[in-house]
Length: 345
Image 1 (cartoon, rainbow, N blue to C red):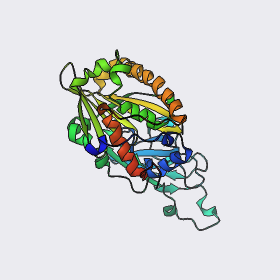
Image 2 (cartoon, one colour):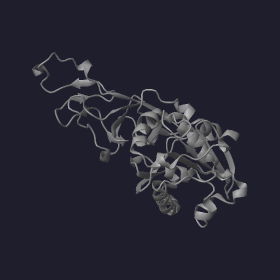
Image 3 (cartoon, one colour):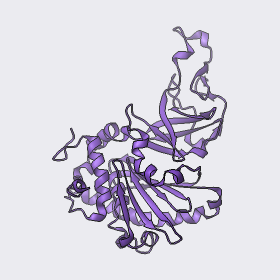
Image 4 (tube, rainbow, N blue to C red):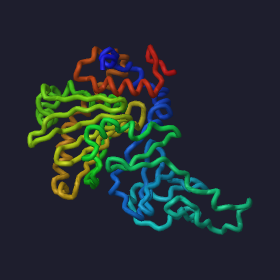
């Protein structure tokens, strides 16, 4: 922790550089696991398509096993399902272009007019390309790179602080998204910033989290925690973790996920998921409205900060309530290979 306190904030050039954004794909986001949806959202015998960082994905559940594939037919790259279809009951995946047909385990079962290919054709040579996929803490996770960190390492602090309560099944009650005109790191930094809450959110988030003197912090190699007393008992746990994800866990079992996947160098998307059991369905709209209220307050702040970073700004000193930012930036430096002078290795 002493080392973190002696560490400066990331240089502003890392928030505006197209070269850095391109390197982040290979060195940062491809080394990490990404949540796609809740485990309960894909029942047995169902498929669902997703798009993650411009990569088309398809998730299936067959025989109780969850699998992920690239959502592109190996013949001419056409998607087998569309994200707008949602989770769909399915026995066979049929390419809408040339009719190549796959089972839910990714095996090619048939291709139209197989006897007429110009070269010898073997179905076993053309499976759907697999993608690493895991279920943990009630969510579906995928990793796009060849050498990701172990998922349990990425979730280390979450499993230590709230393992059992996180593993319980939850329905995905609501999901919303909003574009932000800022680099994803500014939005991620802001959500880790416990220094601004009482000042920027006096009637919203500050009331939910309570006085600063009651804050409890924890850090690990890959995640951070802000725990605050909850009026009805227990603690509200707010976890920050790589690559750009935040999990909020209430004592009553409600879970919110907020993340900021990049769209462009100076644009990202703010995604909000609300998860819980069916008993919370009736209050889900009010819950979403409550979260969106303070997140819209943050939208003005992070977009203003992006303008400042673009001007060549040099960050000021870190406060003790910004320790969670320093921890995540330390991990970012490590994965990106950033050495002294903030230059990429």
